[in-house]
Length: 417
Image (cartoon, rainbow, N blue to C red):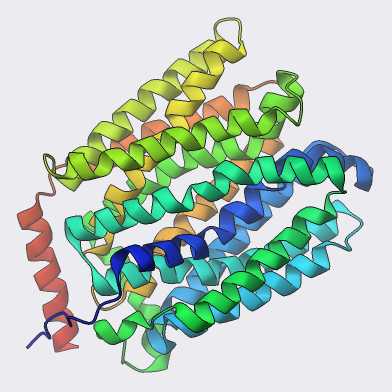
C-alpha cells in the first residue's frame, strides 16, 4: 500500500527560495562572464569564438554531471550529491582565475559544470519527491521566478566587475556564491527522499532505470518538447555576445540591458503560469507557448536574413523567442516528472542531460559554421522551434487520464520488480 504524504513537508516558499538559489549556480556561471568574453579572448591572444566554445563545453559538463548525479541522488540522497557538486564548483572556479589560455579554460569549465550539474539535478528531483501534477508545475514556476534574478543580474554584475577589476574577478564571485550555497545546503536543505521512497535496488541496476524512463513514450515526448524549446534559448545564448556586441555594435556596458530584457519576459511568462493552470491543462499551455515561440523565431529569421536587420526588429523577436521558456519549462517538466515518482533523480538527470547536451551541440554547430553573419544562429533557432512544435503535437493527445493510467502502470511495474 502506498504511503500517504507526510504533513511535515517543508514550507513551499522557503524550499522554492532555497532550490532557486541552488539552481542559480548555473546561470551565474554562464551569464556573468558573457560580457567578458571579448576581453578574455584578447587576454588569451585568440579569437572571440575560441572563448565562446567554453559555453558549449560547460553545457556538456553540465549534462554529464546530471547524468551521473541523478541516479546517485536516488541512491544516496539529494543533500550529499548537492554538497559534493558545490565543492567541485568552488575548487574549479578558483583554478579558472589562474588559467592563461582558451584551451585550459575550456577544460576547467567542463569540470566546473560537472559540479554544477550535481547541484542542479537535485532541484527537480526534490520537487518530484514532494509534489506532482499541477502542484509540481506551480512549484517549478515559483522556483523559476525566483531563480530568474540570477540571469537578470548576472551580466550586469559581470560588466560592473569588468569596469573596476579584470575578468578573473567574475570567477572570484562564483567562489563566493558557491561557498555561500554550500553553507545554505549544509544547514538548511532537507533530505526530501524521506518523503517518498527512493531507489532501493542493487547498485549495479541503478543505471538501468534510464531505460525505464526512455521506454515511457509520452514522457519522452514531453522531454523532447522541452529540449527543443530550450535549444532555441541556448542557440541565442551561445552567439549573443557576437550578435549584440560584434554584429550590432552594442557596447559591453549596454549588453546586460538587452540580455536582461529576455529574462524579464521569462519572468512575466512564469507569472502567467498560475492563472493559466486554473483554466488549462499542462499540455495545452505547452502547445500554446511552443506555437508562440515558433512564430517569434520565424519573425526573427525573416527580420535578419530577408530584410535589413536592426535592433528595433531583432530585440523584440529575441525577447519572445527566449521568453517563452518561462511557459514551456514548468509545464513540460511537471508533465514529464509525474510519470516517475520513485526515480525522480534519474528522470531529472536524463531530461537535463539531453537538454544541455543538445544546447552544447547547437553551440558547437553554430561556431563551426560561423561566417560572420547571423544566419547560423537564426537557422538553429528556427530548426529547434519547429522540432519543439512537432514534439508538442506528437504528445498533445496525452490527456490527464492517460497520464494517470500510465503512472499507475509504472508503479505496478516497480512494485512487481
